[in-house]
View 1: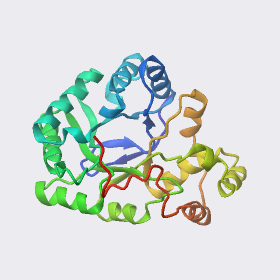
View 2: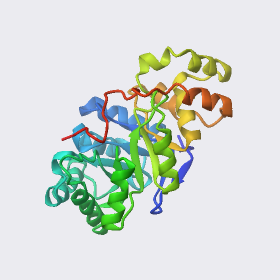
View 3: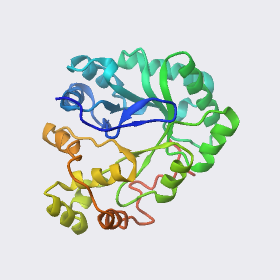
View 4: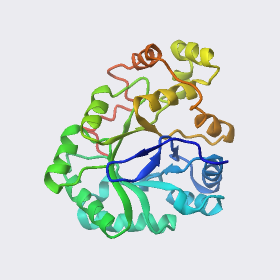
Length: 280
């Protein structure tokens, strides 16, 4: 299947699709099979992380797939325990070895871990790895505006992307506005929130019936119209295809507002506040 997903150009010129494929908990042969399916169905942006312990499965899926490596955009992430400069450099190299890749298209700092206060060192390592050709574009996850401002102030380099928790129950309106004002792309992790809870939501059910679309398709269309890149995950080829089949309808302004209004202050899935949360 040809890739029909619209694309976005990041602030450093890298072009990536508006929808990617999340791989958390897709490990081993079962994971590689699911990821291969996603690639063959049309996904070109694949999201992994050092801490997912499946960079090898992603690499295997790339080798199994019918799509040339150069047509794919592969993302991985640096864990908090390796934020010091030398450890970050060797971890980036190890990430590549695990996946048997020559380069990552995107490499992100997974969390700022502000109590440890080494994220500037980690960022410098990513900057240098990009200069060495190991990474094409560098970004972050879960960084607040204060962290993002410090990165640019102290290194002169702005992230291309910030991957944040974003779903109908936590719409991140202020953070998204800040990203737009500062030319940083927003990427949504856990874009479908808690599947069981979100699929029972009456507002989303009503909109889904109107358009004859699944609730997942309604939510992913909402992300797209918000200007957020989403990375849904599914082992099912049927659902994988559903999740990228969202470009033949349009949510009106009222419907977008209705979905955004589902947000609530304690909407985080695991109470992971980047101001205090530590990931290692």
